Amino acid sequence: MAERGAGQRSWPLSPYDLSVTYGKPGDAGLGPDWFGPLAPITPLAPPEVAGRQWDYLSGYNLSTVPRANAPISFAVLRGLADGYDLLRLVIETRKDQVARLSWTIAARDQKSRGNDPRVANLKRFFARPDGRHGFADWLRLLLEDLFVIDAPTLYMSRDRAGRLVGLLPIDGATIKPVIDDWGRTPLPYVDNGETIYPTAYQQILKGYPAVDYSIRDLLYRPRNIRVDRAYGFGPVEQIVTSVNIALRRQAFLLDYFTQGNIPDSLIGVQENWTPDQIASYQKYWDAYFDGDLGRRRRAKFVPGGVAKTFVQTREPDLKGPFDEWLARIICFAFSVSPQALTQEMNRATAETQKQISEEEGLAPILLWVKNLIDDVIAQEFASPDLEFSWSNEASIDPQTQETILTSYATKGILTINEARVALGREPLEEAAANKPMVLTGAGYVPLSGKPQTSKAADGSDFIKFDKGGNWDENQHPRWPAGSEGHQGGQFQPKGDATGGVISQTALVDDCAQEWESARKFCADLLDLHPFHPDRALLGGHKTVDGCAKGFVSERCGGNKV
Image (cartoon, rainbow, N blue to C red; front, top):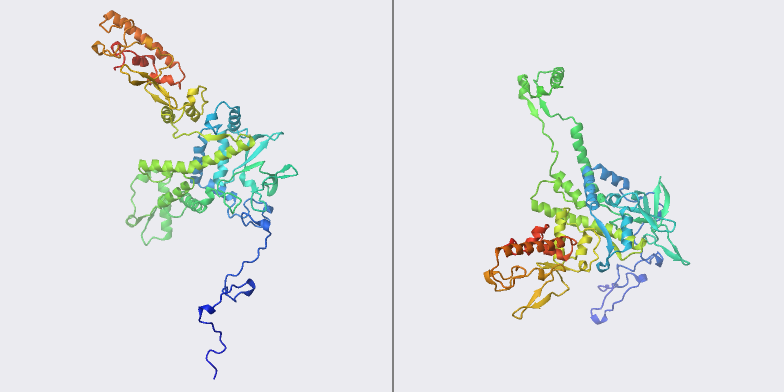
């Protein structure tokens, strides 16, 4: 009889007799790697392939159709944008919001801003970047391809010396990006001391590659780029499904008004009527009301059975919550407020939503334009210290903008020149215009300077502000403190230092002198530059007499003390 367990493997129960081994690739299943992960397959590609951006199709550059491997072509995207009227309105609204803004070019360092001749040349160039259209129209051409197909393209036209003379918009749907071995745009390289610009883009015309471009010839700047694509992913492509639904909804509404086989109402007849009788009565009924609108509002006698079986068909919903939902999706893709397309909401919510839409949607577009132009300024004009900037317009209303800038300038937040630059004006040459100052009752006081102090009669210090070079204290004497009749501090008639009672004739003469001197002083203030600090002494008045009341004593008709 065989022993139980004979011929079977056995393991020692003692932990000291247990050994652990790690298998090799050729010894799979002999150790702990029994049915294990095993070693990876040896790579087939050479080491130089390391760093390839994405797994593109072999022979990618041989294609002669832009977006050949994309499910949606450029033509379809443009058809969707032009076919759905709501989408087109949103695109045009966003283009209007960007094109209406003012812009400027200045030094990045605010301290070095001045009359730089390069700034004037750059402003002159970008006033008509392509030599044909103004900046606003040129920008609209660029934004159209940015929003619809996300393939904005500019051809850099040069003179014989290689200098940039124009940025010409090109249809981005005709441009096919070329990639290198690593799936990226080919960059220039140096060969035997010579810079070589390889082909980076091809323009496809009539179905054939027509022109080769390098990165020196073409600016191809999609905004929403992805690591596994050579083309951009614009907002229209992001909402293709919703736009398709909206187009069918729009076609349904068009058919409702143009064709259909459901009448507005149904009228029953007696059951014993034959089809010929029904058709004859139908012709009579149509002929009776045809061409005479007045008959449609008059009463009509009909057989009893006909009157009892009138059925009004139900009208379809021409606008409902689903239409608002589509409108919100379209607006959300472009960060435009859907307030004008949906049901009314309270004013606070509407204004908040509009502000959020402008901040979240408009700011990235403005930044994209700024970066594009900054690159041109730095690379083509060798001026990396200059930058393109949008004017800070919180509101279109000039009065509101003036109030904001005035508040910033009078509180020392902005200098006078910074406020002028925000308005698109040239800075002033006065040194005070480049210093932050605070407006006080006695004029502008520089934040960096120290006010002058003087000694009072009791030995204490008090601040003395400079009222400007046109002010002569001797021409405007005042009654000393403690004078009779509580006249201390008021203007004192010239030549009278007694503080006593003066005659009525002398008072009239002195008042006339006060008014004459005050009017002359105010006239000099009004002749100063609008941003001169001494104009603060006008007290906001724009007339000589209104200003003079502040410098004439109360007894002579001036402002009350």
